[in-house]
Image 1 (cartoon, rainbow, N blue to C red):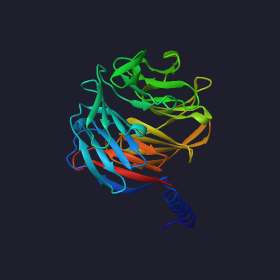
Image 2: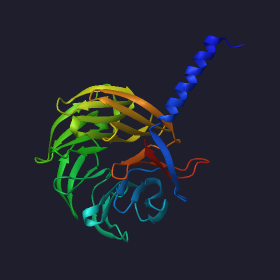
Image 3: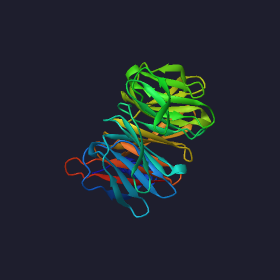
Length: 326
């Protein structure tokens, strides 16, 4: 027989559970199947106006094109070579695809998906970004290089201490922050001078792959795998100001400025949601179960949705899961 005190405690626990569930920060809105897609995924890009999502299916050597209005795949771009980074360039209606295996950055027409140009000799080319100031494309590749790209050629090359993973460009300033996990550091690049101006060492946290920027509050979010932590840097002081434990095997993270949140895709089978209560205070508010290996995601502020790539593993089929923030 339960005592009255125990019943009260159980009721409190049940009420708390209901409140937490009611306040879940992400609601699964839609699942888009990707039949026939094998292997792991890498990064995303989006055509927000046209409501198209581009997904680098690295293990399948394709880029999958998703019609978000219809909720279905409309094209599979073949002929890729371990595609890693993708970038939709709206002004030119072009899709840049970084092919890590053959080291070619391909520029495709984003309507018929035919190759328009190729930028070669970029081994293990990975993340691709658009410069908000110049409209130039930046790419990271090789054993340590960040390049600004003109169609058909490298415009400039900035040497780094190791292979660059995620990097972020300031919109108000001219700095580029680059994760360099092999060197256990973050490199800070001056985009005017095309040179590294400083590095921030990561002594207690390693395998720093994903990154996001809260430029208005001068905070840089860095996801590390060893140990599994989110590290927050003050970009003015150039030092870490906070850190917290997250789920394992992270590969993408995004900052939701509207809600002051960070969404972290983790291959351990979770999306972690971290609340920014102040510039130096953060807490994990949710650990949403997903699927093993689902570590790449993309948040679109324009469409206000989070997209997660789930690879085929065992009985789990390849798919894109669409989450609505709440």
